Image (cartoon, rainbow, N blue to C red; front, side, top):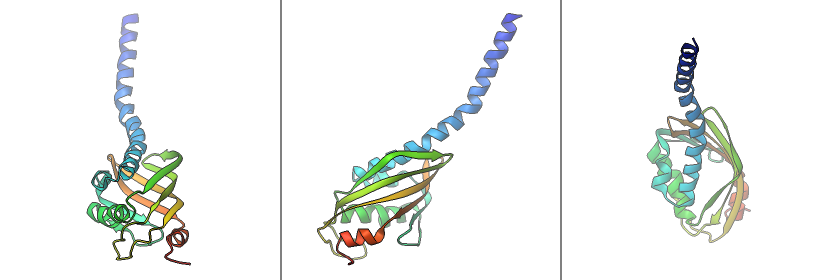
Amino acid sequence: MYRRQLLVAAGALSLSALVLTPAAFAAEAAPDVVAAYVAAWNAHDSAKAASYFADDVTYYDASVGKPVTGKDAAKTGVIDNFLNAVPDVAWTMKGDAIAAGDKVSFEWEFSGTNTGAWSDGTAATGKSFKITGASVFTVKDGKIATQSDYYDALGFYKQLGLMQ
């Protein structure tokens, strides 16, 4: 009798592990994907950073207002643009990311010196900046499906000397 109960209990545990494990991994994967993406930015590796994007990623910068859609467009228009204009950029997470389901968000500090031209033709100012902001990501199937960034663009432009 005890053997039968033991086998039933072991079977139930095995079944629950099969059912629960993918969900547990999915919850842990989203923050790991975002952390690796930030690390690639800090390694100044645009190809590696873009590799974390889904092919149809939507990248939204609240200061621009119009989303960039697609992995190649986000790599060129966002990552390459910043890494070329600010080759020493540092993106620092302030505290731990907050994760719920497929969403990950965190407050950050972005800093560096503008020593290269921006993709829109704006010349380098040679000025340093340090701004804070927050990002919200959606991660699906281990890839960033959406990224939305919110920060003080006016303060950023003032630090670069592009506005007064």
